Length: 542
Ligand code: PEP
Ligand code: MG
Image (cartoon, rainbow, N blue to C red; front, side):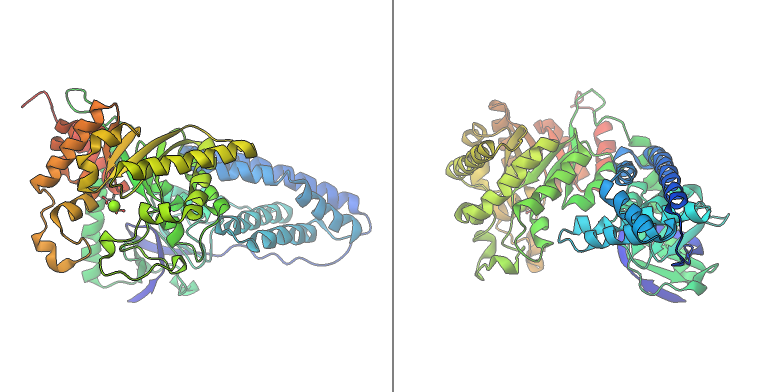
């Protein structure tokens, strides 16, 4: 048995034969032509044909993976209308008297390089789209059939990399999983794989041509592929796969259904995410919105303090993709367990009670304003909620609102477009829960952060495994604070959600519904099990 590891894009188990895919390699000569007109015509008819193909791929992707994942093919169609790109290719044919194939390779390669040289990882990943279009153009010019990626039997597909168009062309009924040597978690192949919910690993450096035809198990959970696995492994991973299939059936059954109790009480079931790369999971699991986007991951994933523009792009992408769903972005909750070198935070004896979250933002105003401006600008692209973490006083909320108003004024003067936002705070300290009546006057919603609320109420450091046995996630004091917060919110027309881990605890769902909670935000995988639980509850029965 051989084992090769990579980076997980989608978990899950697939078992079957491997198909190693090798894209065609085209020999492009530098032989010149006398007359550029026939080459210009060949280029133009290839361009039109590829645009038609991209349109067909768009329609196929809409059906298989949804509008959002398909949008890339619309973007491809537009890229092929780009004057700079077309003119660059034409110039090579006219000035250098090169053939259409040569001009396509040169013109498209230059554009791909331009994307690769950009700083933003999102734009860097767009170079793969240009490469994809180049290959589609070369396929047409060389008369190759692009649909010949798979064999005729179900297989785990192994490739150097897959372009978005190759991923969509795949016959999904024959596809057990995907393994690539290259690729990034921002690439559209990764995005599509997520929306298809297909076990996928990328950056698997050890893939080899002689895997073709061998029996394998792709273990997406552990980011590895076993070639010719032992019988013990086959048995245990087959059992795991069966368990997953049962859960999958639950998923299919509940997708598109409302999160309503037997007696007709509706609650919103949202998902918690850490960044744009989790959006696919929100869609696949049919969450009704995002109740907690932990924006600090945008900071943690960056080598330097992210600029306003970088943040704007990340927030915009999530909002645009999920519109019109509500997306609640929590402002940077750094500190305590989440430390970042470039923030130069001092080491503290008591970090959970220390300089963290809103305390940092309110004392580093420029840092805070960069995020608020990015959020306000992104609000024009979807339905945004903004919430502040670690609130303990009315003063903090008013200070946050003042800085937000200052950013709004600045953006109005600059003529920037800004949408409406819902404003909220996290209730994750006993202090906030106890003054919830006053706080509710200031905001549209509360979101109960039960992880920290439990830590601060029970005086149990959530990072310290040694004292975990002392922790009771159902502690009556925590439940009482939750109830008080919901009641206080409702007295002031402020809706109340739960975004801490307790929201996914199915043994408490009925309790929370009886308390009147309006929204539960859980990790994407818990969305459908929670919906199932809600649909089994009858609040009319005592
Ligand atoms: C919480 O404290 O419950 C919460 C959702 O925030 P985090 O877990 O990110 O601290
Ligand atoms: Mg918290």
